[in-house]
Image 1 (cartoon, rainbow, N blue to C red):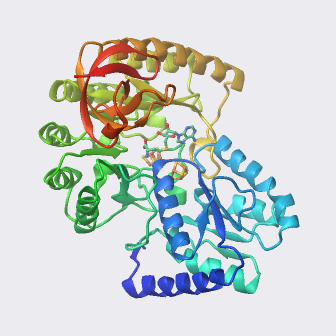
Image 2: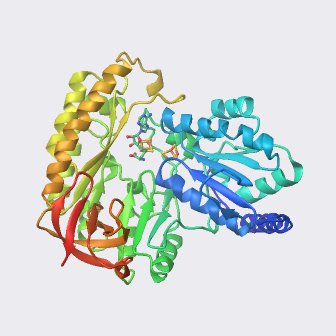
Image 3: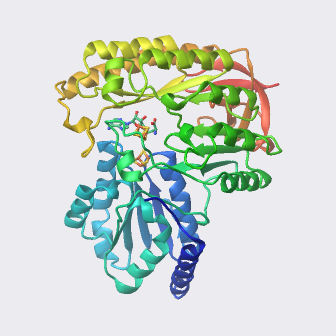
Amino acid sequence: MISKITSAEMAVQQEYMKKVAELNAQRAQPPVAHVHSFGCQQNVSDGEKIKGMLAMMGYGFSSSPEGADLVLFNTCAVRENAEDRVFGNLGALKKAKHQYPDMLIGICGCMVQQEHITQRIRRSFPHTDIIFGTHVLHTMPQIIYEAMTTRKRQISIPDCDGVIAEGIPLRRESTLKASIPIMYGCNNFCTYCIVPYVRGRERSRDAEDIIRECRELVQGGCKELLLLGQNVNSYGKNIGTSFSELLKRINDIDGEFRISYMTSHPKDATRELVDTIAECEKVTRHFHLPVQSGSSRILKQMNRGYTREQYLELIGYVRERLPDVALTSDIIVGFPGETYEDFCETLSLIKQVGYDSLFTFIYSPRKGTKAAEMPDPISAEEKGRWFRELLEVQQEIGCSSYRSYVGQTLRVLCEGEGRTDPSLLTGKSRQNIIVDFDGSKELIGSFVDVKITEALAWALKGKIV
Ligand code: SAH
Ligand code: SF4
Ligand code: F3S
C-alpha cells in the first residue's frame, strides 16, 4: 500500500531534527557531514533532502569523508559497478572509524532495499552505524538521533509499496537549476531492471504541490525546472491528471525559464504529449527516449512494451512536430540471448534516428529480476567488442549532428565559467547541448543568443549575437 505521510508524522521528525541540533550544539566544533549520492537524478534529488534535513540538524558539509562526523552514502543498485564503488568507499572507512569511533557511518538508497546487500553490509562492514531504505528517508532525523544516543546500529528497511512525504527541507545543489520529483517508483518491470524492486510502486505527487514548488522556484530566480520520474509520461494516472496537463500548467507560470523532464518511456509517450511539448514554449527541445535495443525480439524479452517499428514511428512524429529537437537515448548491449544480428539492428536504429548523444551500458545481471534467470551465452569479451563498435558508430553520428548546429543561433542559459577554458562562459541550449562562448561574467544566470561557430566532440562553441 502507498501511504501519504501526514503532517503530524512530519512534525515528529521536525522534533527529532531539533533534538539532534541541540546535541550538536554541545560539541566543541560544529559537526560536518559528507553525503555522496550515486546513481540517477532521482537519487541526487533525495540527496538534496538528506542535506536539507542535516542542515536543520546543525551539520555543515564537506566534499570528502576525511574528518567528517557523519558520512552517508546514498546508493544506486542499477548496475554491478555502481554497487562495487559503494562497497569500495565503505571499506575504505574502516580505518577512520577505528581512529574516530564517534564518527557515524550510514548507507541508504536503492542498494539497501535488497536483502542480500543488507546481509553483506551487516556481515562484512560492521563499522556501518546506520542503514535505511528508500521508503523511510523522511525518518532520517529519528534514525540519526537514535544512533547518536543509543550508540547501537540502526537498521530501518520496511518492505512497502512506497510513500509520498511532502515538506522535507531541501538544500538544493544550484539556485539556477532545480530538480522537482513529480512521481516516485516504477510499475514497468523491464526484465533487466532493479528499480521497481528498490523504489516501490508508481505514485504521483499532487499537481498543486508541484506547481507551488515550481512557482516559488521561478520567483526565487530559478531558470530551469527539471521534472523527475522514472516514467514521467505516466504521471498522474491515479489522481486524474496527466503529464501533458502538468506541463501546460507549469508553462503558464510567468517568467523566462525552461522546463525539462526525465525520463520518458516510449510506450507511454503519446502524440498528445508531443503536441503539448510543441505548444509549450518553455519546454526544452530535448527528448530523451530510451530505446534500449533496436531489435523487436529483444525489446519483447525486455518487456519494454513497444516494437522497433512503433518506436521509429514515434520518433518520426517527434521530428515532424519538433523540428529543432535533440534526441538522446539509453542502450543496453548484451542483454541475455542477444545475438550479433540483434545488436546490428540496434546499430541500424541509431543510424536511422541520428541521436545527438547516447548513454550506453553493458548489461549487468541484477539479482531478483527476470533477465537474471535467462540464459546468457555471450562472453563478456564479445559484449565488450559490440560495445566498442556501438561507441564508434555513435561518435560519428553525434559529430555530424553537432556539426549541423554550426551557423544556427541558439538561446543559451548561461550557467558559469567554461569547463575547459575559464576565460569562456558555458551554458546549455534549449536542446540541452553544452555551448561555450565569450562574454562577461555578469551574464551568468541569464539567457543569451549565441551564434554557433564550431562543433566540438561534446559541446558547441559560438559568439553572442
Ligand atoms: N526509468 C528510466 C531509467 C532507468 S535506469 C528508463 O526507463 O529509461 C537508466 C538506464 O540504465 C536504463 O535506461 C537502462 O539503459 C540502464 N539499465 C537499467 N538496468 C540495467 C542493467 N541491469 N544493466 C545495464 N543497464 C541497465
Ligand atoms: Fe527500470 Fe523500465 Fe522502470 Fe525504467 S521503466 S525504471 S528501465 S523498470
Ligand atoms: Fe540507481 Fe536507484 Fe536511480 S537504482 S538509477 S539510484 S532509482
